Image 1: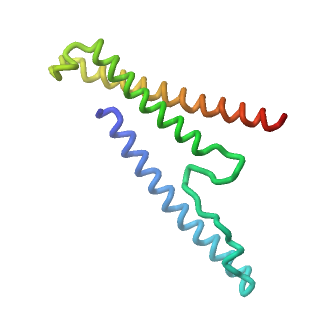
Image 2: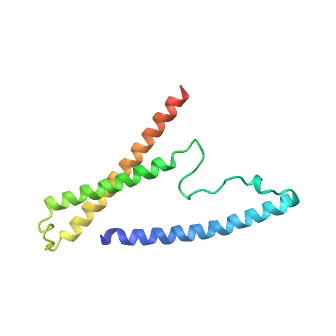
Length: 137
């Protein structure tokens, strides 16, 4: 599983830096809005605007469906990758792997996770398009 640790750590660090800058920018924007409104500001003007970073709460988006299909695809990809390695890589079930077996299993896991994760997002897109087409009619 070494093939996924480096991109995962880089992604987490990048996301953390992005969220830090986003926090500072939002703070400045909120302070500017509060100064502009002044005494007319009430708590009811804000409403319920708190949301998760990747999942939009507006009625026209399908963020939860996208995340769910992506996670289902990644899980299915890991399962398929395990079965491919179990049946094709020699010594995988006894963990007495030969010289090249670690690289082969890493490629199989990575390819299957990316393939099935992409298929999960494609399924989410098709479901969203079908839903929007049915609501138009």
